[in-house]
Image 1 (cartoon, rainbow, N blue to C red):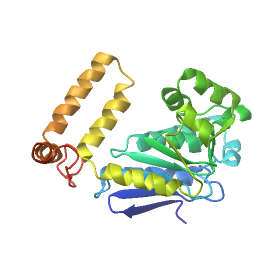
Image 2: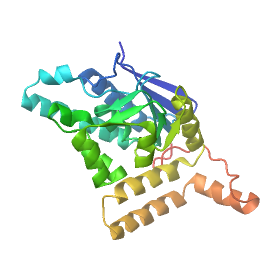
Image 3: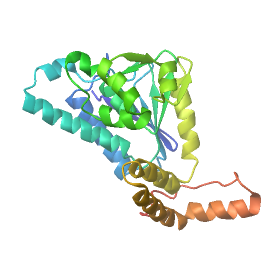
Image 4: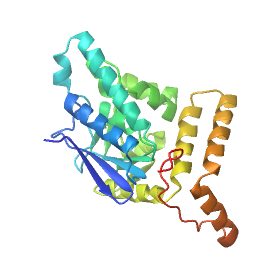
Length: 266
């Protein structure tokens, strides 16, 4: 039975984790997620934004601890390497990614959410990196993406205590971007994804590249990256349409078509 469901509604695709009862990451869920993300990357077929969703009950409660306990150290390292690689592929999707967080987003579940560009949390959601309580540490991006998102001191607090935070505290920390009433997280994430999907695909991809990769290099290199990406976007059909619309009608009236990802003319 599939553990990943891919539902497409116009230009927005929902990647739904479906591994009850807790959406725990085992090898099958990891491999299906990787296959789904590679399909969206290589063959977007008009998809311009993605929503990550675990269902109304919870997002994901981390790795399958029983399966990990049965692994030898070398096997566990290889398993973790593959999961980290899969989450990297989620983070590098060319289109905007929005996470809809319900119930628990813990351990590997939070690490997956950190790969999104925007996070919407239900007001009863619970987030955390509890690996230290098992004598472990996050291994799929938690120590790296968390510190880049909320800063080293706050990240160390969550990582070293393993404590859970509610949605309102997560919002204050900058761990999530929006809190909505319970039962509406998916709809809110879908609405935001739809708004992004109406934008210029090439420019959105370039902005994502500039922000994500520019954060890891010096300012001069980041500015060079920005110049290069700007030059590439300037020649797209969406840029031509956007500039023409601004001149003829003023700001905010441009309508962008499905021109595909920058550089491949799809």
